[in-house]
Image (cartoon, rainbow, N blue to C red; front, side, top):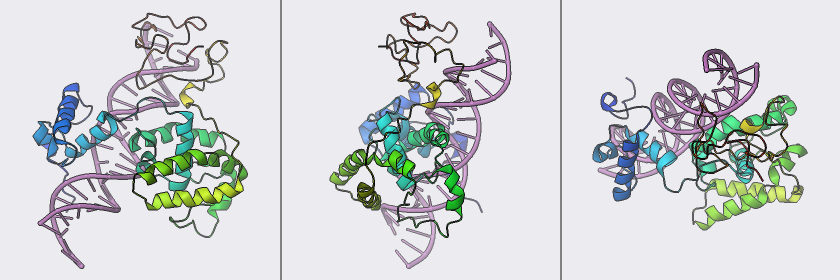
Length: 273
DNA sequence: AATGGAACCAACCGCTTTCTC
DNA sequence: GGAGAAAGCGGTTGGTTCCAT
């Protein structure tokens, strides 16, 4: 006998949410608050599964969500936290205000993972890739309660400079009155690392999407600054900060700026000084 | 301008954990 | 303490967009 379905599938919508559905959900939650996800769809007049409503609210509609690119500081913090917590996305998200577990998970899988690999770091173990064979032959992986001791200095330098930020993140969660095992764990690791490492190096990860291939037309143009700021979630023109790219013409719908390289800028990809 | 592959991310699925009775 | 319900979580999928050719 299989698991009973979480909801009645025949009369529920699936796939992308419409504006109207979003509005219904937001309105309902504004009045009644979060919770009771199973009964919410019916009460709100939505033909959706309760789980789907919960996900939509948490990952997209919540008013406190921070949209847009991850900052280098957030990148660093995610790497640091992942090195200690593993794929505990919700725990990691809990220490990055305005970010969701789903968002961080996606970001990890599409950006950070690749960055670490390109730098010769195993994104799972956070050790140097060529040392993973040696790690695999180790007698036992560390117990979950133990933070894996990172042995190669390159990685330590990469991750441990984040201690200050991490401390702040931990302080935030501690001051909220809830001290978890993870907080404890993070404290322990941080204290351990404080003795061993100077905190000078920064990994400085940039979103991979804007790291152009060697033949990229963007790369050789002088006035485009190195800092990629394209807000993909908004699809916004960073030149006028209003319009959106018109795919067919390649021009901004608002300012009609062309995709020039110098004066008019690399539309949607680079901010100009 | 067309096209194919890569990248991205919202949403789903199913398992686990927590809560309630 | 056990059972069932509800919520939470992490892995995966599939549609859309981007970009190089």
